[in-house]
Length: 161
Picture 1 (cartoon, one colour):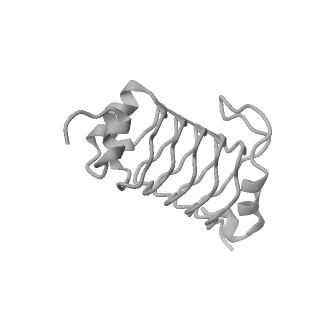
Picture 2: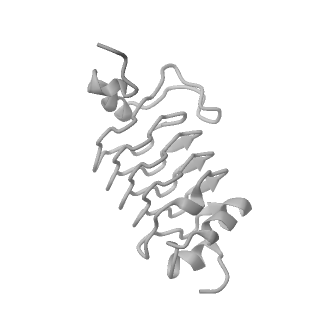
Picture 3: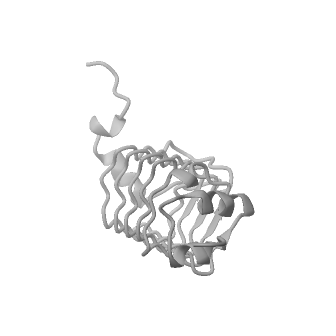
């Protein structure tokens, strides 16, 4: 057979690596192995405190996942779904969120810096940014997002309705 762009379709155990995470180099996404979670279906996963730096998460489903205190630095999450996930106290640094669904995500006290595609993400009025540390450029991108409405807008620091 030819090579697949989604290695976990040949080896479903690759998705289970999310529960282990990476073991070294959080800040620069240097890891001992490639963490390929593309198109993995992990709804409700317990990923609290995991280091998922450098993870390939594109088109994955992490709805309702518990990701408190997780470290996602330089991760690639284009088109991924995190609906209702708990990312309280998480470090979300230099992620590519383009086209991701972050409806109802709890970002309480999270660090959100250097994000790509924040203006293309889907939010809803249940998304929480309370006490989140959001970089100035990230806040500008978030405020441009038409799906960010109501209380989440004021928590991000957006002006106007």
